[in-house]
Image (cartoon, rainbow, N blue to C red):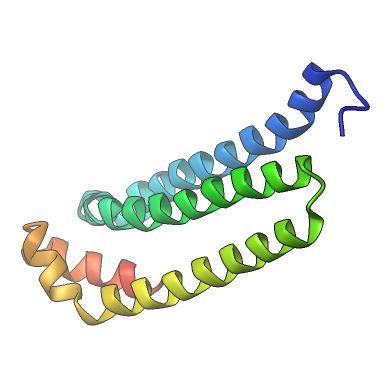
Length: 134
């Protein structure tokens, strides 16, 4: 496994991770820019007030991804390729099922979520439009 120097191997894996996080961050910034400039301050506030919902869903997905990648890496290091493939497949299936169930629950319970987040008036209407488009 370690045919390269550890720092080269580390850079090989860390650079895509950093680029992925930059892409996610820049998408949020670009979204905020366009909504703020073309929809207005009510639209921007509505988008930002729904951000906790996306953060929770993203956090749980990231938890599955990081946890399973550690297990897969350990198994690959032990040269247990079949077990690593099995763990990877189960992680993909688990994340897919969680995503479908969580998005369905958010879609069905959107009014309750807005009540918990204390979203009212025109913010509620704009946040509803924004969430239902994703």
